[in-house]
Structure formats: C-alpha cells, structure tokens
Image 1: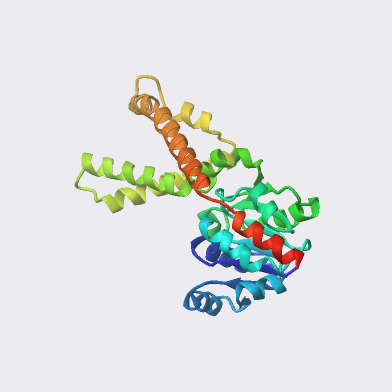
Image 2 (image 1 turned 60 degrees about the horizontal axis):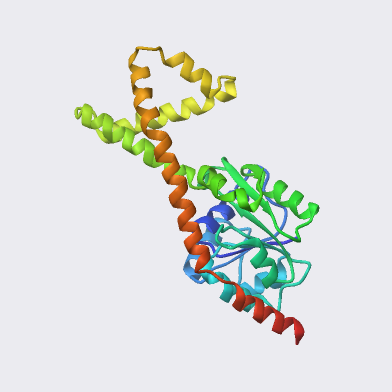
Length: 281
C-alpha cells in the first residue's frame, strides 16, 4: 500500500526522513502533504522518492495515512477527508490527545496510534504502537515491520500510553535537560572548564554508559561497581535518591494533568458529523 504523511512538521518530517533513509528503505510509494508548500518542496528535494500532494491526493492514493498534524487541526482535516476515507484505509494518529475511540467514531476506516521519538532521526529509539478498535493483526504486523526499520517497537494499551510516552518520546528532552543541568553544575564548581566542554564530557559518558547493558552490565551492576559505601559516588547517589523520586513523580503528574486538560478541550464531533453526512449522501 502507498504511505501518506499528512503534515510534515517536526515529527512528520522526521518520520519521512527516517523511513526513506533506513538501511531497509520502504518499497511502497511515499506521499506527503503540508500547508506550507516550501517546507514540503524542501523535503522532496532531499528525498527524491517523496511525492508531494494535497490532503485529498493522499487520501485517494494511499491506504496507510499518518496524521501528523496538531490535535486541534484534526477535526477540520477529517471533515475535509471524510468523503474519501473508506474501510480499506488505515488511519494512524501520532498524538496522545486524539483518543482512538473518538477517531474510530469519526471515520469509517481502521485506526491505530503510534508515538514516535526524536531518536528515530538516527533510526534508533522506541516507537509506541497502540492498536485501534478496528485495527487488524495484518495492520499491526505491517506497522511493526515498517516502523521497526527505524526503531524498536513497544506495544501498549492506550491507557498505558502517557507513562510510556514520558519515557520514549518525551525522554530525549528530559534527558537533554538533565544532562544540561549536570554540565552547568560541574561548570559552577570548576569555571575553568567551559559548559560546552562539560556537556561533551557528560554526553560521551551517557553514550558509553548506555552501551554497558548491551555488554551484559545492567543498571544495578553499574551502581554496585562504581559506588562504594562511604565514597564520593555513594554520597552523590544519596543526594540523588533524596531528590529524584519526587522530581520524576512531579514530571509524571504534570504531563498527565496537561494531557487531561488538552483532551478536555478537544473534540472530533465535527468530523464525525461531516463523515456521517458524506457517507449517507
């Protein structure tokens, strides 16, 4: 089936780049649409296999459609596409705000959700796969194969998605902020070394440490090997143990609350009414 990406903002463009640049590139035709012709033209210039088109073009030509638009643009977009969507389409949203039950009510096609990560930019990291009410085993197998070319696939239920998203999708930003603060604290202690140099040291340490579990050295083993009771590392870990659980609990609480607020102000009823009218005409 041809694959379409409606919206080539940060995440949409990242997925296009990752899939077209994968070691095992997609065989299917890849189409994309964007409200900004310049952004789409730039992406198509880099990736010659990418076909630019309108939203309607993609709905006519592609049986797999990724919705990579802002949640509050979704209702208007689905109302626009309603006459063109059929039960043969597989519609995939990349937003946690768009709930799959609502999406399935608004369209006649099969649905699913994937939550990508910036790490797919280098064809690494984890993509969350969330089945929709009408998604089939064949749909999920296709998505696993497609997105498995640029990431590890981890399947979750929609109610589990917030916590998992905080790890795999928000994770790069959370980790970057953690490392930035670490480098700034080291610079404050030793101003003779620049913040940028400390950032290089931090990230190289993170990269190397992330490979240790692949060598059979788990996180628990790292702690046991590096930290000796009464030593400097031990004291540092004591400080982290006092602060980190509360910090991460607050991160989880605030992201969950913000998602709840966004969902409360979001509705696909416009698209559902438009779709029902189009299908009944």
